[in-house]
Length: 495
Image 1 (cartoon, one colour):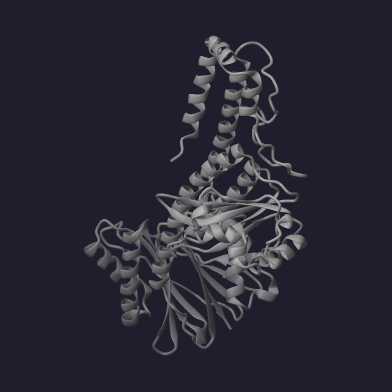
Image 2 (tube, rainbow, N blue to C red):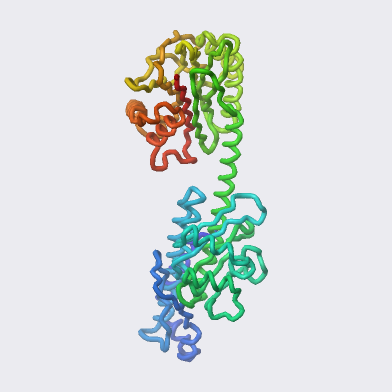
């Protein structure tokens, strides 16, 4: 990994040494003529119109030197100060990139930082791993979705971006198009797109490293003929190599999250049953490491229905495996004695205590008779259900009980209630409350308010009810995939 802070400290030390040894500059003056020294140090200035980068690159070395002014050593001090300033800017940009935790935010940060380093205003980034493993996407900076589509109509080999993506040998250090409209052999379609979008020059840079391979490429666009100076190319290359390593880690993390989510979904019902008199909807959000929250809905004899939600302690593969075993066991007990929820949870607690004595879990099981609109439920350390209807929005009062696996013998009385026609019963896990970051009493009040605020037109649709509750409870990124808490909501609407 590129240690920018170390480089900055090295150059600062060099600057101090130069200041304490002024005779070095005198020796350079005697050996090298002033004119030749100025010619060696004169940089190539980029010619860019209307550029105002967010993070300006150092300009300490931007003015041409026709002579060495000031006291002895001023030239070396100026050059070293320029290096320190450039490396400080690079350090700030890499620190900002390292602070991103999702692939989308990292790609956006990379585009903005690269534009600042090369002095461009617009750009696009194509993520296209060479090994075919990982997401493929295109992101624009200052370009609309339609404008990004124009680039796809240009033959790939006719653009610097396409040549970089194909990994051609002459593209390792980037491909510059300093005056695209002035090139006589420019592809006609490329010329048409450049004219339509109003750019006259471009600079493409690969996103590749020895460890990560080639992940894609970035292209920045200039409004007028221009190209980045050698110093800008060097800084952009350093930044791109660091960014590639960071993107590779995020891609691997995204892949792991996707695998965890796929396994979790396979352990949950693939579809909800259809029982006359009741309609069901469920929503499930899995944390990055995979958690133990689950739900179930299974048809029972005589057109009855069993509903269950639960949460296994811990996270990761072991918690997911325990969740799968617990759900399968509860299904078996529900088929045998589902009309008695207390017996179902008692058997489940005994199984958990005998087979996994170090594991704890919460669970709630409800036996529903839709035709009679009757619900009998029992809970083991689980959050109480919530009833939403035209005339009420309230929690079901369940008896306090310990989670499964906490006591030598678990048992608690069941609760019976009758949902009115048009009412919806919400079962959920405590992850819905914990993701809010509020204290539990405030989280319960927040859930009650979210359910009560469901529009009347949506109260007869259990899917619309669950979506509204999720949006209201978890706004502004609280529903993000990197949260440590799983979320489960199971809604049963009684006709």
